[in-house]
Structure formats: structure tokens, C-alpha cells
Image 1 (tube, rainbow, N blue to C red):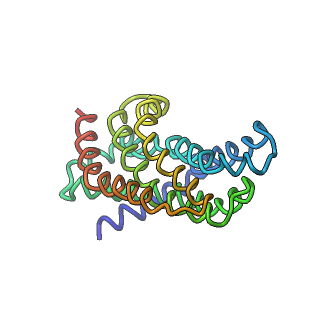
Image 2: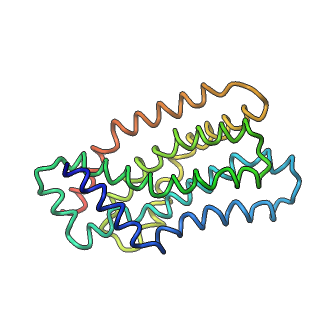
Image 3: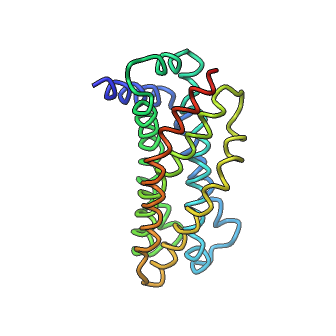
Length: 220
């Protein structure tokens, strides 16, 4: 029951800070809408790079909104109370990562049909893109939270976190774009989704413990 209270609290706090909540989403939309202006309106070219463009924009926008995951709790002392409470810090950080994923990914998924149409994606490509986003973006939230936890006490740590984490997401980006490319050629992409699912399950098993330990270290 107390974890449900933590979940409701984080959701409510996020929607009270609408300006910060909208920044990653607006960044995501701006990157995708400006990209065709840079490479030209050719439907073939846009279709070829559409999966990569959307995935790069998704990674950068998620990292942009990740800095505040533990920042407010650290500044007001709530994070210290979490570490001292009887509730497992492992479960608390898992709830916070889930909140981050829901708050930032659901709007991206809602906008994705329009952006896919804008980039001339076929229906099969869009289904593959949607599947990769649902399976792959939890990896970004889970692994990214480790970097945020390690730098939570630093001022303006967002750029540092991005520099540390972006190289870790290159394999995820490769398999996601490969799945979309396979869909464009009417080829099966279950292998790529399987690898991404394995990455997500591995992150779910290991990341919360690493996040909890990092938060304890950051407060010492």
C-alpha cells in the first residue's frame, strides 16, 4: 500500500511541474519535425532513416527528463527518509523508475502515429517501431537511473549523465533500428525484439539494486 502512495505522489508532483514535464516531449517533437527540413522532403530518404531518427530523439528526450528523477527528493531530504524507512529502497526506486517511464513514454507513444506519418513510415514499420519503443525504453529508464543516482548530489548533472550513458544505449539503438528496417522489407524482426527484451529483463533484474546502492553512496 505504501508503494502505491509513493507512485501516486510522484505522478502528482510530476504533473504539478508541467513546464519541466513538457520539455522532453517538446524536444522529441522538435527534433523529428526539423529533421526532414535538413535532409529534404524525399519520401524514400525519410522512410529509410525514420526509425533511427525517432529512436535517437527518444533516447535524448528521455535523458533530458531524467535529471529530476531523484533531484527534488534529494534536495528536500525525502531521499534520506527513503533510505531510513522500513520499506525496501529497492522497491521504492523501482516505483520511481516506473513513474518516470510512464510519464515520459506514454506521451511519446500517443504522438508516434502522427510522427510516423510525417516521416512516411509504412504500417508495418510503425508496428515495429511501437514494439521496439515499448520493449526498449524501459532499459533507458532503468540504466539511466543508475547514472542519475550516482550524480544526484552534483549541480547541473544532466549533461554529465548524458555523456556517461549515451554510449551504453548504442546496442539498443542498433537492434531497434534494425527491427524497423526489417519491417520495411517485410522481413521478420523477432530476433531483434528478443535481444531487446533480454536487455530489458536484465536491466530490470540488476538496475534497481544498483540504483539503491548508488543513492546510498551519493548521500555519504
